[in-house]
Amino acid sequence: MIITFYGQNTLALKIGDINVLVDPFITGNDLAKDKVDINDLKADYILLTHAHQDHTLDAEAIAKNTGAVIVSNFEITNHYEAKGFEVHPMNHGGSWDFEFGNVKYVNAIHTSSFPDGSYGGQPGGFVIEGEHKNIYIAGDTALTMDMKLIPMQTKLDLAVLPIGDNFTMGVDDAIVASDFIQCDKILGCHYDTFGYIEIDHEEAKRKFYEKGKDLMLLEIGESIEL
Image (cartoon, rainbow, N blue to C red):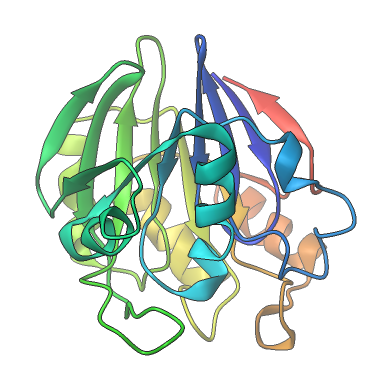
């Protein structure tokens, strides 16, 4: 599994021959828009954690370009299906065996609405069990006790957690979250994009290190392999 970070919560996952894109927000991200051309991105599936613009802005353009299936909650997929896109609806606690692995839509504590204010269902995260590696993409969320349920079913190799604070968990709560999910290898997301969520990178890494954990803060376009 190869994971590429494109800023905010945008991730590309290459799982075998399948390309999965998560929460595409590039053209509106000043940190990413000059470094990434959305027309170059490959996607067989687009996973959306919730409807906020900083997670969905480029979903339509990329789906039109690639023919990707949009996977999200029932309300979000209804929104895109009405526009002619191929979708796969899910809801909390449900899982589905896709060609790249099993995906479970899990709880998140946040809000969810489209840019026009219309209802975007309830936010969520994704637990993806691939053939060889398992990851948790939390989406935008507060620290929640529901995270303790994840390791009861899935042993995680990596967790993608928001760390920017203000709108989501900050660094300290993300450390607790890593305890809850029993995963010490964390990829940070949802930081630096706006003034409200700028962080001190070295301090964040130090806090994780002092707890025996590894926090990765990737450059835009940088990849890791599990």
